[in-house]
Length: 141
Image (cartoon, rainbow, N blue to C red):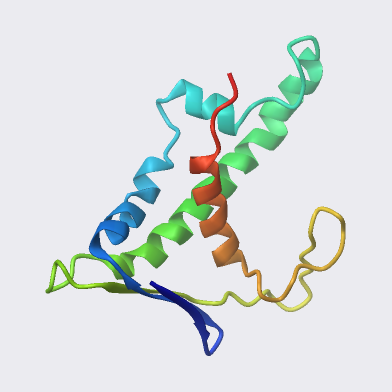
């Protein structure tokens, strides 16, 4: 497998068929609906059960946006992974091209510390990495 940049596009080539199949399963695997443990882990309240008012406000104002962001990130990854669809040669290596998304004029992206995001970290790649990271972090029990 080779990873490189080509005209602003992140290109991952020589992806073997087994890995391509695993990548194709990411969107389905990230659906937390009807799995209470997954929903609890992804959309957990910001405070303990003693803070009823804060948790209620979180559920009303923050959780819907978190769900929307997670859903749109999954849709972005799903659209990028369509390139790995069944090809004519089922045992041939694949190539995945992740386009660079360009921020809208006037928009400001920043990291948690308030500094500008590195130009190489685009939202598409961030979504892809976020979904993979959420799937690989062990649940806290």
